[in-house]
Length: 598
Image (cartoon, rainbow, N blue to C red; front, side):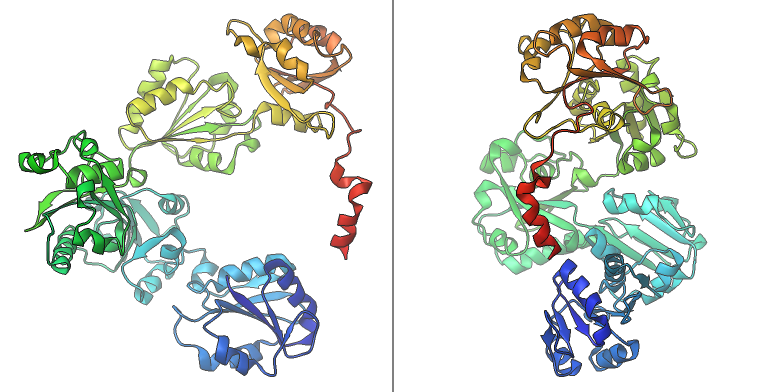
């Protein structure tokens, strides 16, 4: 944000400098102070700069602030954000352009920087409601109207509101998770009884027909438009107007279009050149297009273009979505088809989540949120504490995968996925480490199922924390090896333990408690027998146990304490090491701290 500080009161100098150091905002002052820009009066500054800056932060009396800006205020959509901070730096007040101008958010940020209290009086903020006039900007949506005072009034007064979500993105996920009590969420327009509601909010690229209550439409850019054109089709403006009219007939605004696409041979068409001034244009070879199955193949198009489709096939390829929302529509010299980008489809979704090492508090914030809204939680049996699933929403299915083979797990997930439900597959630690997710992902990829992976804290990270050890020590150990011993699962020849041990790195060995004798023998080929080791059983679980010793005693350490497969073995001089001093803190770098202090 391009902002400026206006220092009214000399007493606020330190506050102004704190803001300048953090944000690099220039400081204009009525007093000749160091590191400030001197001005004779505030009016001279605002007369020139009022609309050149996105925000002004006044430090001094509120009355002076208000009188200074009064004659320059025009419109909340164009006025800059105005803050006022008292000379003691105790309160940061959002004065003007709270939502649209960003004053409310800036007030919170600046208050946190200087240790002050943000003062925000906007009704929606005070009541914990959404700011309807900033949702579009926040989530990169198009909104159907700028003047929405009526709708905002209905919403902030707590009137019953229906929320229709026909696509899925970060914005809709946030709305689902954070909707106020007066909002009911719907996914199909026909399910909404409009007489029961005072306001309708819609997040969709489409405008439904027959809306008879106040409404706002938030539309993401999510549509791919495929076009076909006659050779040197003219007049261009008429063709583009006809296309726009066709989109409007389907309830689609041009503001929802991500891109247009067509065949390579149309690169030099006048209409394409004109569209390129506004939209990205994607081009496809005929051999790519003819591989796409389309609803309306054309032998005529095949005769001239060597593919049965241009508009439908290019829309499908661009969207990576086989389903069209507008099948091929013909004009006099053009054809048009449209599809929603697959990332925005409100369809089934599978989230593979790393549960962390055991403690329910060590799951990621994203992982926790996904668990709270999942329709199915399939967790990895005894490896994941059931307490992690206690945040599941009412009505969710929560099931252990311990009694299910892979085929049964896949069938269960697909059953929910096909209904458009959210599935969480909960694995221990981080899924990338011995998580057994490869087979599942092969299936998801084969059937083009939508999935994502949320990483988790691994046992080796929990081990470092519980051992209070830094696993990398300057000039001594700079590598951590995560591996396992060779049991029933064979190791690649180049990854035998004794070969990895040659580096003398910090080694974290998973899934090897039952073959500890073999592990110890291999490690002793390279590590000294006095090398520190730690046996970490059920890290961060209630029954956690940790035993320290030396490599020569590793076998007895595990056997004498009856440690099982749930044990991570850590080997290396980094354990409990306090001798390696980072160069950053050595005497050679003390000048950095002297400079910073100055």
